[in-house]
Length: 146
Image (cartoon, rainbow, N blue to C red; front, side):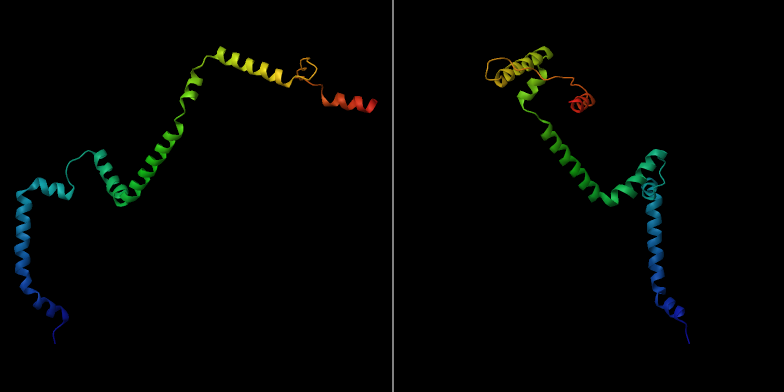
C-alpha cells in the first residue's frame, strides 16, 4: 500500500519541470536588473534616518490613511471656523487703534453725562459714594452703644 506522500509526489511530478523553468526565468531577470532587485528587496543603501522614516510611514501612517485624512480634515475645519470667528468688524478694529488720551476723554464724558442723569431733583449734584467706608466693626460698636 502506498503512503499519501507517495501519491501526492507522483501526482505533482509533472509540475517540477514547469517550476524549474519558472525559477530560471525569475533568476535571469533578477540578475539582469540588479538595481530593480535591490529596490524590490529594500536592501538599497539609504541613510538610517530615511529608512526609519520609511518604516514609520509604512507601519503607522499608511495602514490608517483614512483616519489620518479624517483628522486632517477636522483640523482644517476647526482652523477655518476659528479664522471666521476671529474676524472682527471694522469698528472694533478702529477702536483698538484709538489713543489712550482719547479713550480717557470719552470715559470722562460718559461719567459726566451719567452724573447729570442721576442728579437729584433739587438741582444739587449728587454726592459721590465713599470709596473707603468705615470698617464694619466700627458700625457694630455704634449700634451697641445707642
